[in-house]
Image 1 (cartoon, rainbow, N blue to C red):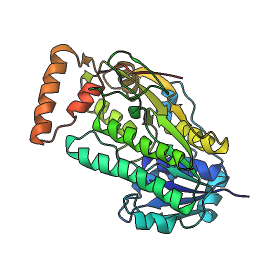
Image 2 (cartoon, rainbow, N blue to C red):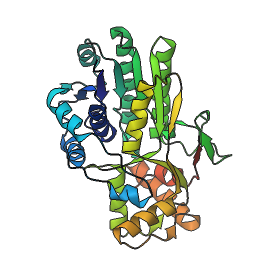
Image 3 (cartoon, one colour):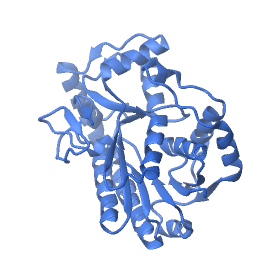
Image 4 (cartoon, rainbow, N blue to C red):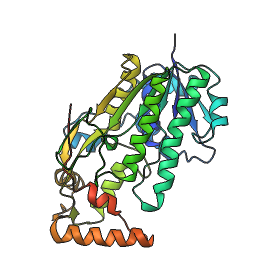
Length: 330
């Protein structure tokens, strides 16, 4: 019998890709979006898969693009895919949507921002949104919930560069407001587990992949194309979105509930990462490391622009967090 699922944040980057992967895997997909959601990103992701295109940048990093069953995707879009309008901050809309039974709810909706001006919005949207999803699952007896979190919700201790899936959260200057929002969102999800839900959580690194819009991959490509000479001295974990989608689906299909799953396939320094993208684009490699005087100058400048709420390409939180060498271990 065909499994029926609800995907929140279905017009977002991860949600758009996940819908295509779920259709390829034979699911009936109900995709949730807001009335005001743009379809640009979703449509570009759909076109990417239906055209059979490969992610050439992913292959530049030595990884292989995942091919979907295009016949199943096409048939699924025609017969087993539907949109519903709702908002994770609107509990009435969630109750109406989730009054029908789903085999599993995939919670992908979240705000991603490192702007100081978005701090309150991040905390409200991500934490309250997760709490509303959990509460509505409990009220409507939707027992299976898979939550897309982030490695940002894991510990970033000043005493070690090694982070694993069991690293406990500690207060640290490397924790951005976004990181705090994802950590406290997870606490809401684990509360759901204590109250009877089957909960699976995946913590992906920086998510790369195809899609029109303000995606991480497009942002990094834009930085290199602009001729930016600066490169952070830290490192981070990365994963391509098609690999992430397979891991998300596997959590439900293998009933791998009750704990976190690390979603990192590449541990890379920002220098290696930026240089690989520059080589792929045929652009000059950025060579000015954000350390010493450059770090302190940018840190002071971004602190001032944050305080004055002046527009600036990067925030102080991002300057500080990308200076950290984070290595993710399974």
